[in-house]
Image 1 (cartoon, rainbow, N blue to C red):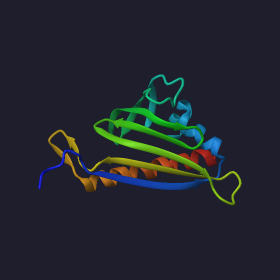
Image 2 (cartoon, one colour):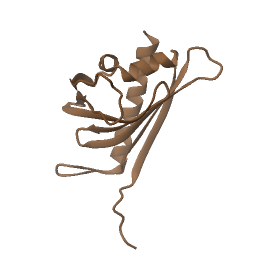
Image 3 (cartoon, rainbow, N blue to C red):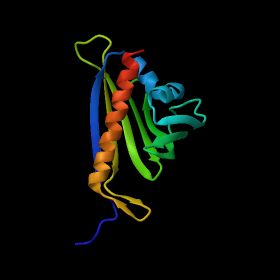
Image 4 (cartoon, one colour):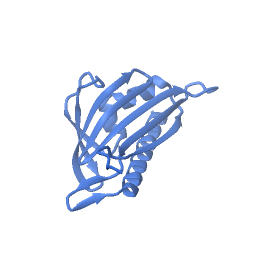
Length: 158
């Protein structure tokens, strides 16, 4: 059996119901000034993204990953306003595909189901070794959970 040049992918997907309208939630994930306010890891916008999110155009942020300051590069590849935002993200050494999805929650007025899906390689090379699939899975789950909880709190307390 021959080896494959394609790395396996780990996918983490969670969703939350937010007591806010879909336009409100969309604004929170697409307005750079709001992202800095609800996401405590995003410290500052480095590369202005006046028309964010625009497919193929990067937004760069100063980001705090644990105790390590890094650059987060977000390159939207699919934008369906009010419904979906898919981006290629570089967060320090980590590379992943990030997809936000929004839909109205059935039977509930002004409630939005927000999903966040992250797909990353199952191993990440770092100086002196590799972060294995178990650590990648844990990091991805923590990232997705933290984003959803922070965004939910922000939109519901607005």
